[in-house]
Image 1 (cartoon, rainbow, N blue to C red):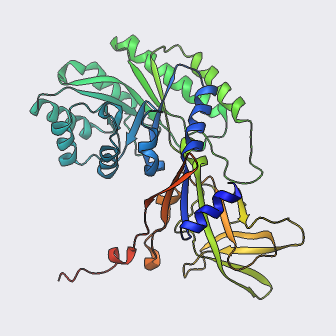
Image 2 (image 1 turned 90 degrees about the horizontal axis):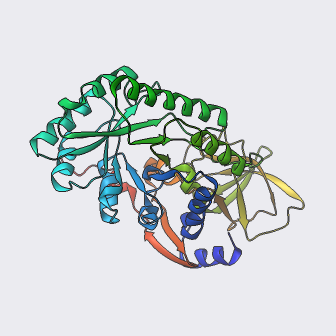
Image 3 (image 1 turned 135 degrees about the horizontal axis):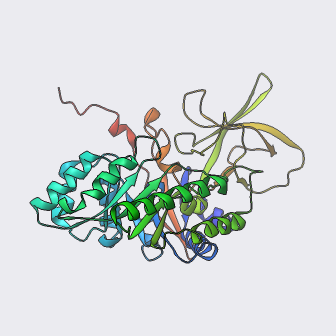
Length: 393
């Protein structure tokens, strides 16, 4: 992030603060499209970052929604209903009925259990509406359903008169760092789709595939992403299945657009260890794969300085717990109270995965940076109101 941009942020807002760079976000989506096979469409999993949803409505084909709250966010962001995929391991029956009755244009509903199948079947008949359904194939955890259950559903698909089984959904986890694993999943899906066609004359119109592309958060973990995406694309292009393929991405789309700024508010040396106390902490900053705060994420310090004559500092958050360690033994030259650390790649999950309610500290502000201009999209929020009794006996 340019020094003048940091200066502008600090001039107008308090730390800690999240800043999401929309120009960088759109550049990231263009990069993915340029380096992936043209047969792929993009689905953004909004759980990664809900603040950017309205900014990329025209940049992706779909949005995956996994809760009533996420659906409300999409509604308020004016997301085209046809682009919404209603997913999630638990679909609240009353909420799903509200969706079915108030917005018949919703694009897709996933089925993650036989109970969910029965719910969608009953609601579609009750309200005389046809629902487009993706059957989620399990990867061996609590999500989705078994191959034999999908086969049974497809073999009896005529009995579900108001359900249109448009295809298969599959997701097996995040941060897949090798194409070997992805290729194994491609082959597995290709074979299963072929089985459905050969045994039941069912041709899936589409496959929604959560690829779990990796984001390399820490220094020294860089890799040839272009080569990685090209190899993955070759695997997709060589599939026997020739229907539509939508890849679902969250972290890979959103991570690089985010910055988290937090200020040094105190410093001390205890028993030979240097400690810098920051006004943020682990309640705001979560990096997937961080281990005991030993890895160095990509970051910069403001004001900038040369790395000569550095001392190692433990960067600690403001929570009253010994676990609030952001980085151990980070080399800094002439660290001062008032210095600001700018943590990069915080555009996915950081603002939602932290233990935000601990100690009743305020939630940080959130700003959007677009075309060089800053816009506050969420002010600080006092969490103590959520951690106290309302006086109801």
